[in-house]
Length: 295
Image (cartoon, rainbow, N blue to C red; front, side, top):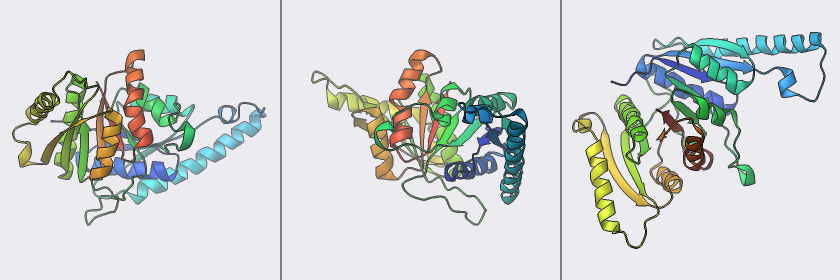
């Protein structure tokens, strides 16, 4: 059975990171996991590299920012300290992606949950945000939370701030997709959600039999689902043709998916290029939160 035992949630107190904290808190509640909230204070020499600061001034600025961050983290943790979840908090110093990855390694995090601002316009496919850099290097799954097109975050009677009702998994039947399916099935069970399995047929040549390829893919999707899955969640399978990232985004919009789950092959140069071609685009161009699973 899938275990999520320790969740790290970096926050910068933006709308996006607070929304991510709602997810982290909800997941900690469902899985009985330990939740750690982290804020990273970057040295002012990193934030403003072209200015010279006296040592005393730099120390005072850092101390003031750290003290304020501690208070805000403490207030955030106390506001959600119900239903058995007692969040811990920590203020770290350093370059944000490095500090987050170090914290995850030190605590042997099972999952990192982060907010991502996303981009619009010509630079929306640019690489380099803190969330993207963490996702590329993390050794555990990372959930990137954006503001969804539809709002499904609202506390219910149990105090759970997140209601995951529809989960979308795109699979290419590889080992990393199988691992992603484990997470998707577990989440569907925990939240009593509907799970959609999607396979995208790409680069279909005229010589290929589309009907045969579709039937074969549908059969593989159905075989991937455990026989008893229907006892604890609702599962449906779909096959589409086109660019994977476009079909994932389109289907997520059509079905108003609350979460997209994707497998990521690894962390070497080739795999990072593949990450950029699908996962990166789904995060940047889509509106649903994305859970990236590494193996």
